[in-house]
Length: 386
Image (cartoon, rainbow, N blue to C red; front, side, top):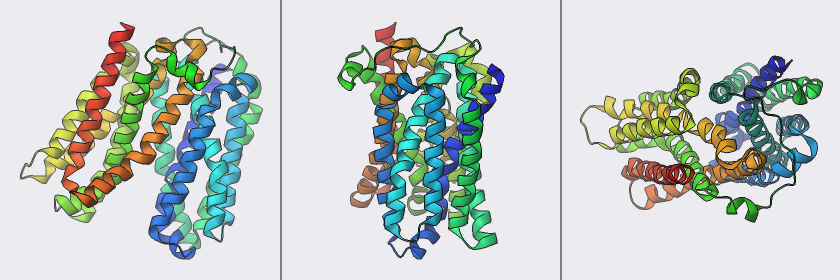
């Protein structure tokens, strides 16, 4: 029975990734149909991010009161309804309206599922589950592309993904009895108790260090992916097609890296996985930074950065119960998710401003500073926890 639940959780992680790349893949057409400027997508993504931050902070209270199964099912249903709303949108304000439940649903399910897996499953599953998130994020642009080619409609693309989410919601509601049954890899069961306030969470020894580490990681990942093609084309003079291909390989590196890490994570442990990832991504950034005559070094550096990113997110989440106690893990992971969304929301635009005012050449320097921040904060936590 517990193996069946694991299959459902894997499907849930695919569903987490499905909507994440829909807006970006459809926006070149959407903004024309909705008669808004290209930059208006920032408004939608900011609304979504705001919702995810709020729901992440409340995930501890919701999960303790209703349980992970109910929170996951309701959150996926909320996201499915929001995507259905996107499919019916005929004006920009309607997108903004439906972005609110989209954000609330995404943040709650992300925090709840990550904590459940951290408590109940071995590290290999955390890596493979986040690899499956990458599968979902990779599939949705193809769904949107099919909709645009077959039906000349981005609305239909959102409707197709909403249908997949609703199908998953049905499975989740039928799976509710499974969430409290069966033994776990670690022998642990869900921990109940009073919810923690944000000041109480921040007072837990070491929490500020991991929040800054997570902020830095998510800022680095998002900035790398968002600005890779622009840097390669406009600063390094690489052809657009080549730059786009290697920019996509950055995400493929993350997905492939997490698949591989699933086989070695239980042996290495979360602490060593984070160190390994930091070493690899730092090496990749240095290859991008060095003014070498052959473009292959910068392009390979981008792929290596993706591989280095792969184990860090899953390892930070999986180590949370061990670092801060099982009774605190849901609360801490909720704040970690909020910190992650802050990093992905504000740090890539900050680099964009720096690139516009100073130089695009700061791209690898900016990434290297984020990597250094992660290294310092994670090692501070390691020394504190022994």
